[in-house]
Every structure is written in structure tokens, then in C-alpha cells.
Amino acid sequence: MKTIPVFLVFLFFISCSEFASDKDGNALKGKVRDLPKNMSYSYDCLKDDSSKVSDMWGKADNLINKVVTYDIEVTDEEQTKYGDTFLIESKKDKKFIIDDQDPVNEKLQTILKELLQERAKPTGIEYQIFLLKDTATINAYTVGGKIFITTAMLNKCKNDDQLYAIIGHEIGHNEKGHIKASLKQLKASREFFGEWGEALMSIKKLLTGSFNQKNEMEADYYGLDLSWKLGYDVCAIKSFWDDLAKGEKKEEWFDFFRTHPYSDTRSKCLTAHIEKNFEVECK
Ligand SMILES: [Zn+2]
Image (cartoon, rainbow, N blue to C red; front, side, top):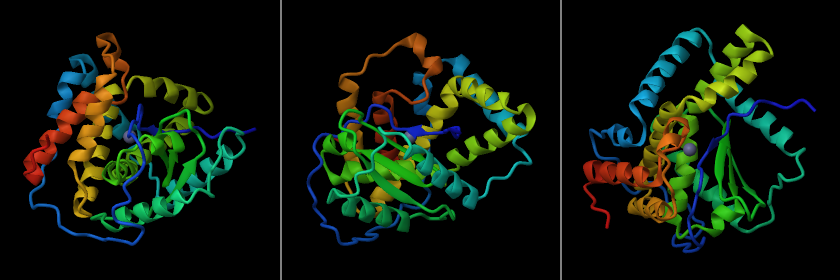
């Protein structure tokens, strides 16, 4: 079987509690407020979470990518097509089970539609959201406009506020060009290194810690901003990460390889973002 290389952008260690509180029903609520003017986005909060070496590496890696992929273009249509191919290939795996019978599917479609309507400068990427029958892996991820959420993740969700922010995060990875950047690298690696390119890319992915941590925060901010526009409680996602931080062990030596910020760092970044831009103080 020919396998396609996968650039999954995972929300590791997701933990919402119980998926409940359908406070708005299934009707489209739509935008209830604009983003404040002069929004600012800071990534200084990540500095505690990554060593100076990985920070430098992140910047160097970013620069190298820009040079290597300078004249390589990946269109929105190609990204959507990549998502389609990923879905077809994934369905060949017996463990990949899409649960389209669960009534919650309707709600997921509504959430996706509401969030997509609030994008300021929408790309042409086509989106779909799927519930994956998996009660063991608590996760959400996205590939070329396809968003996947496991039942374990839904079962852990405390409220809609958290769910909107999480799905918004996955949209953010697509809209902010994170998937596109990976696909550009893939194109470049195939071009320059042939078959070896993909193996090299996998190794390289391990070494881009701080670069990816920034992407994760960018996607967090993106999801949070969309939730704000729809009138959801932006502090809910902060408490989501607070809950998660309780059981998280920190390994200093591991920082260099981390693709995701620690949960308490995410909470800290989001708290600062919320206070500065929305003038809301989270408890
Ligand atoms: Zn992510």
C-alpha cells in the first residue's frame, strides 16, 4: 500500500471533561461581537518553555524553510486534495473508524460552520469535520481542511466554550498556513532528495521544537479569537489547560524536542492574550 506522508498537527494530551451543556442548541448563533481593534499577539510567553538553543534552532529552521521553499507554491486546492487523499488512505486502516451515526455529528457540523463564518480573511481550503470512534485516544488533529476529533476527546469536554476553542485551533493550523508550510517542505524534499527526502523530513520534524510551539500558540490564539466573536467564554480554554497542567510532568532535557508548549505555558499565554486584548480577567 502506498502511504502518504502525513503532517498531522496534533493537540496532544487533550482533556476536556464531559461533553455536555448544549447551551445554544443547534441553531447558528453567528457573530455576536467584533474583535477589539489593534489586537496584539505575543509569543514571549513561550520563552520559558524552550531553551535558548531550541529557540535559535527554531529561528534558523524557519529561515532555512523560507529559503528552500521560496519558489514552491502550494495552493488551497492542493491542500484540500491532500486532505482528501489522507482521508481515503486512512480509511484503509481498520482502527480508523468514522462515527457518522452519533447524533453529536450534527452539532460538530454546526460548530465548524459557525467558526468558519468568522474568519477574517478566509482561505479557499474546503473543510470537513469527522468524529472518530476512539474512546482510548484523547485527541484532535487536522490535515488539509479535514478535522478529526475522537470520542475520547468529546467525552472529556466540559462545555461548548472549550469545544469551540479546540475546533477553532484546528482551523487555525490551516488558515495560518502551518499545513501549507509542511506541504511546501514536502514538495521541496521530494524535488531535492527524491525518496530520501521524506525520511529526512521526519528527522527534521523532530528538531523543530520552538518553531512548532509557536505554531501551536498561533493556532490557540486563532481559535480563541473566533470563539470570542461568537460570544463564547474565552476563559474556558484557559481552565482546560490548567486542568491538564495538574497531571503534567516537566522534563527539562525534553524541551528541545517538544513540538507543543507545556499546558501551564499555554494557559499563561492565553491568560495574557485574554487580559490584554479582551480586558477579561480569568479566575
Ligand atoms: Zn495544534
